[in-house]
Length: 522
Image 1: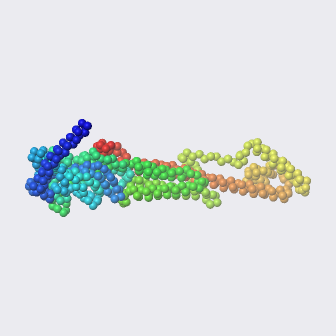
Image 2: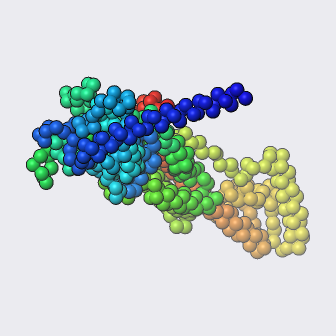
Image 3: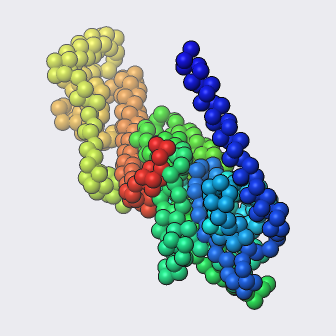
């Protein structure tokens, strides 16, 4: 119960104190605005020739958006302006100790500070908050504003880029002889310092909310005095520079790594066997994938013709490699399926691609096995004995039923099998091999016809073996070309990837962002 009574007494005392204090502030407000006939349209100086100094500061709270296509930076700032108004001075002892008064900004004189490089319809502050007025005439007005400033976007090293955006503030009406503009950090108490017109840390980042796409690296400012063609007077301005560096994790995962992976798939085209029939299909699939990435890239970067973005250079380089791989693949397939009936291998091709290049490429051609050596020695002897018995059995009826004299020793001992026929070069050698044993008598017509058939078969088999040998040589030439371009394209992919991607200067920038060091929001 005592606590409740004490609380009621404390609230009543606070209300009584506020009632007693408010009349003094009200009287002071009426004195400054009404009694003194304050005119908000006239510059608040004692003499017309006197120069009024306005101290300007900027507090950045959010970097809302950086539109690369439209080249607009959207930021949420508090524009702090401070000046001295001689018409708003009073003695606090005459007004109950009131030393600070909050006056609506619409009722006092305000410097017409505007954003020169504005990209929106509103150049000035739209939210008219109250101004803080002190007894010595010092006025502080810090309204919040969302500015859309034009920013020239350089996409040369996209997505590993660093952008430099500016916000230029100045008075639109008053010249430098009437209203001087000084950065708030260029003051020594209430006296402006004009020695150095540049400020290294010019934007307050205490209440900055971290951006998910950009890191703030530098926030300097420069005070300039310029003369425009419209007017003979000079106009001061303060240009705030914001250096931002793009965070590359999103683009590395979703753009760079897939592009690099697709480019290295080009190398596998030359490792795929020609007999699979999928070499050209693989090249076309890779080319279509890169086309899709080109369409995706066109939506992310601004349509500029000044420079080609870094990732655009890499995609273009990869597409050239894929196009060349298609050309080489077609040539390799043409060589792979050549035959003696359509092409004749030149001697230099045989020397270069069958003797020189395989040694340089560490390729070892397997030895071709002769068909006669495919079986074992035992099976070879068994087959010969079976052929002897077959010929002997066939020769007996011919001796009994024929009027010709046939030397069975020749049939039994000369072994007219496939091995013997393949070793005979032509009919003349065949006859000499037979006559070396014994002079033969005339054979029956059936035996001569059989011998002619065997010679025809042997000639045909020799021709097939020669054609097969030439075809295998053409296939090996195609394999050597594939291996050669495998090494060439692998080297080109690695060198091109490192040479293009590593051009970006932000990759070597190890500076810690200034927003992490200065902001209290982390």
